[in-house]
Length: 273
Image 1 (cartoon, rainbow, N blue to C red):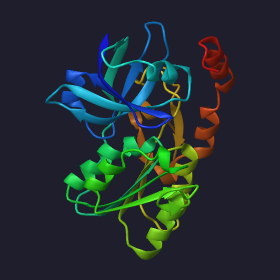
Image 2 (image 1 turned 90 degrees about the horizontal axis):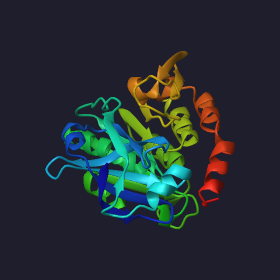
Image 3 (image 1 turned 45 degrees about the vertical axis):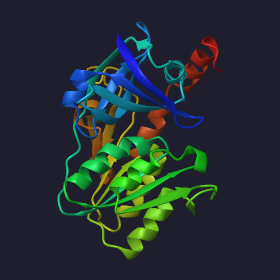
Image 4 (image 1 turned 120 degrees about the vertical axis):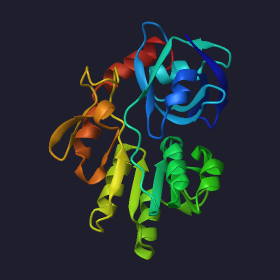
């Protein structure tokens, strides 16, 4: 069993949890994830590590209430326990040094990109960050991102905060004015695809942290398979970070929709439909 040290609702869709995971906190590196099981017989879901604190033995994750399992988790309280957590899993991000790096986060992906962006900054890179969401109330981790970035650009699709538009549009405008050595992106698959389409003609190396369906996180089940450069890869052990210009995003997006019917039924059964 794993104890919840802290719970904080960030907005109507997302919740931050701090778990007591001393062994994982000691070994975690930027870009890795954990597999969480809320109930003993429940679904296993991957959650990117948003931060880790070895000194107190804690790990932070940000959960978006989307499916049945994330809703069950979101209703847990500080002091309660969940069934289990495994990790850290996946490969840590490969860090450049002395470059101009743009980190792009969309929605809950802002929390996922934060530890990576911080690591780039600590390596002496010139860090520019772009974050965005549908509306102001869904922007998360703004203070954390602003503290580590030389410049932070914020976008909302409805124009309620920052620049009206998407992170892709903001990125495109920035790249038209400034030279960039690397782009790192986390967010919805369609957003990451558009970022890749923006940077490809400019020949800017671009890394995307993929979020496919995942079960065991060890490469055994094959659920997280993705096509990269025409070859089959498993996001859990080969990634989760890949060359965005080589990723077959169309296949990724299609696979993410595979169990929508079953997910809706599960939500109905547990009373969250």
